[in-house]
Each structure stands twice: as C-alpha cells, then as structure tokens.
View 1 (cartoon, rainbow, N blue to C red):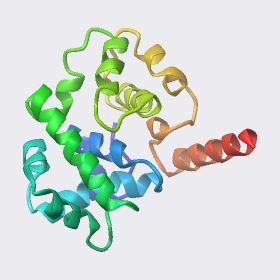
View 2: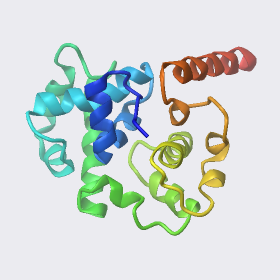
View 3: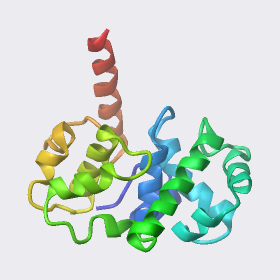
Amino acid sequence: MRIQLAQQPDADALLGRSPLALLLGMLLDQQIPMEWAFAGPYTIEARMGRDLDAAAIASYEPSEFEALLAAKPAVHRYPRAMAGRIQLLAAYLVEHYDGSADGIWTDVDDGAELLRRLLALPGFGKQKAQIFLALLGKQLGVRPRGWREAAGPYGEEGVHRSVADVVDPDSLAKVREAKQEAKRAAK
C-alpha cells in the first residue's frame, strides 16, 4: 500500500521507503495539520542534502539543526522545540537500534512488546504510540500477534480515527470529521 499522509507525492514516497521518515513524521504530528507534519521529514532531508540518517541527525550541532528546521517555511509550528525532540529520538535509535527505525518492530513477538518499545521512544506517549502501532499494522503490514489490541481504539477495523486510517484524500476528510465530532462531544 502506498503511504499518502503528506498528500504530496515526493514526501509520501519518502515516508513509504524510509522507516525513519515515517517515525519522524509521527513525532512531528502534534499541534499542526497532519500533512504538514508528515511532509516534515522530506523537508529535513532536502535541507540536510542527504538521505535521512539517525546518526547524522543525532550528531548535528543542536543550534544548526534548530536553524535547519526553523528556516522558512518552518518544518513545524515550534521548530526549535521539535528539533530537540527529533535529535533525542535519533540518538535513542542510534543507542538502542543501531540507528535503524524499523529495528523497533522487525523482531517483536507481539503487539504488547511493540507498544512497550514505542512508549520508550522520546516524544511518544500512549496515544502517539498506539496510533503509530495502528499505522504500522494497517498500512505497512506489521502485525505481530495482538497488535490490534495493543493499538487500542486506533487498531479497530473500518474506523476513521487517526493517521493510521488515512489512505487517500477521502479518508483524510473522514478522519478530520471524526476528530471535529470528538471535540464537539467533549465540550
């Protein structure tokens, strides 16, 4: 299945071929529109002038990496804070998975273990970890035993709750509707 989260062909192609790009997009997916967040890794890669690489990101001079994210148009609404979070995540990947983002999920025995690994990532709370787990299962075929249960409500089939359910512009609109409805119901 082709990833269509950024709704830009080149950015989506990167998300489809780079597990690190997909993970960074998920990290960036807060307080900005989803498409902007998932286009962020493509922008970062272009500004770095090289393929995304966790070791290279982790070793960047922090002020230079902040400037890279803050250059217009900024990668995120809060580019300096997100630069720090991205570098922390990259350093974690280098330390625990030899810099390989897909090392998080390639050898897991079950969904609960995958959720634990995702929860250990800097910048990933329960909701973000469950949504990413659902994204892996629904769109990338990463389906260890019990993955739907570990993903909570985001793992349910036939729903439009999160980025895990976005496969085209129509499903994006349905996810947005569901989120707006949830906000109205919470008031």
